[in-house]
Image (cartoon, rainbow, N blue to C red; front, top):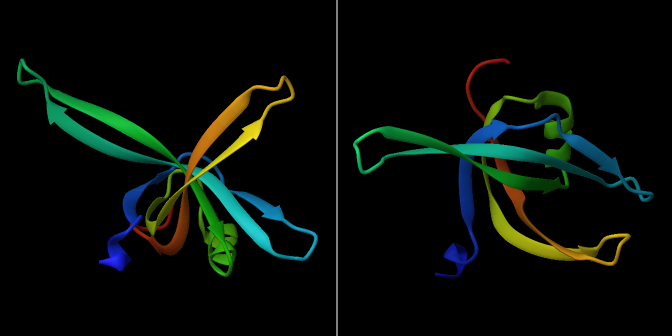
Length: 112
């Protein structure tokens, strides 16, 4: 059951062009938002569609795939774990961020 702890799988579309961050040691990290869609019927029987936005973080060798092949609007599947972090703004306000740290990525659909 340990393999099921903190595991998330999502299929959705990139909401923006990936941001590639290069560190002093040469390692890279990719960040982008991803939208997943859901639909349901309301009390009157009308179909309601809703998008959920996720912050995606990719490290390691998968960054090369993101950098060379992914673009805004492209459909992908990711698997990873949910992480949380916080930081303080310049004004001293504490902000919290929830991100998906990806360990597997699959490109779906045709070329964009």
